[in-house]
Length: 236
Image (cartoon, rainbow, N blue to C red):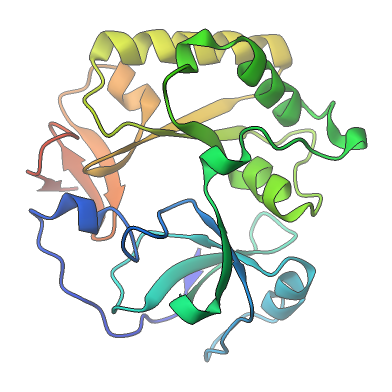
């Protein structure tokens, strides 16, 4: 993703994971979709950005250090390569849609059979293992459900965000990954799940693999962590 230079940032200490995990405090979190009243102009903006924003006036919250009152966002274009890192102000936000807000939103009737949406419907209906977890769609599926702008294609993956504020054991991660893989096989789509932990976002597959350290993505950038539920982090 091409990123415009940041506004003044707040220096977050590494022992502040709850703040470092997000770009802008507790109201907006990474992967939240923001409906915006407008998009501020910055130098070096790609030509496609204004057209994309007029079609869907939304930005997805990304992980970055920002000054108080600012939000780091990503703008999504029509093509896979069209991703642009930008900045919004708190006052620009009209509505916030988290992944879990979108889990029960259904696509347009003619879009139900797309593999990503079929898999999401199956998870809502049958995945008992997700009961008790806060989870929802991110990526193209989440974007389409929030904006109602056709975004998912027949080859789109289903990206999931699962909140994991409490420690998830290796065994629980294995069981969850196996269940998601089973659903993926039945619906013919790749399901990519990310856990949102106190240290940042980590791939469910990495935790399930039992690696000594996993990659955590947060406002300071990616870091290797031995324990995603502790505050000690190592540089990648």
